Image (cartoon, rainbow, N blue to C red; front, side, top):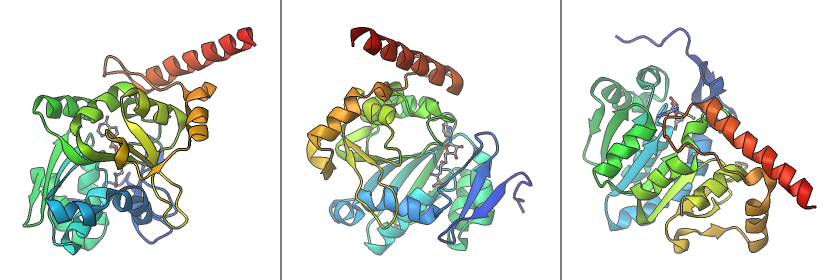
Length: 278
Ligand SMILES: C[S@@+](CC[C@H](N)C(=O)[O-])C[C@H]1O[C@@H](n2cnc3c(N)ncnc32)[C@H](O)[C@@H]1O
């Protein structure tokens, strides 16, 4: 039997669900207020699965599968509404899925251990295929394969630790992978992220307020998929701020520090130019 690694620090969050601490990224995988509640508010509620499942099977691209909350809660919704979902899940760290299969909700253990061992899970209402490796590369392969999804769950670590997946250049890939009536959901509402989505061609809006949770971001190819848009004044504040310079990674193999440094240099130059013209 597989054993949970000794260096995996698991933590019970505010709603009783488990998360881990990642010692490389130096971050928890979820908000300590509640892993499950966070996944429900930022990803599942704005997915509108009841409406989507009434028409057809729903396809999901889960960028950063981690412990699998986003996919597994979406699967529970699919079962509830008697629909089916098909998930392509991207993850760079296979071990986290193995560890999760030993640690989180026992009803999910079979699915997680199948994904860890065989990279596939299939039942009458749920299909999951895992693609291991850097999501930047995996997305290029999916684009070459002409794949498109109804929903994209974008859930990397924070912009300061995992900038590789918050760049305009990566968002352009996600744009190609989204269906015209699909939505991309993410937890961040940081200015460089919002401007990054705009530059990649998306319309952006807010996710609806769920309980005490902070709102997240909904990005879409069609304006009518945005239920809670920013007002004109808010859009101006988003695009005109000195902090709005997005992250870039043209080579699609940049390191975190390199991406952060290049952006910071542009922010400083922008501030100097502002100062000169005032
Ligand atoms: C915040 S956690 C995701 C939490 C997850 N969605 C869940 O519900 O448990 C971020 C995940 O992104 C993965 N990751 C970080 N960089 C990546 C990359 N370049 N490509 C693919 N996965 C990456 C990490 O290994 C980690 O599992």
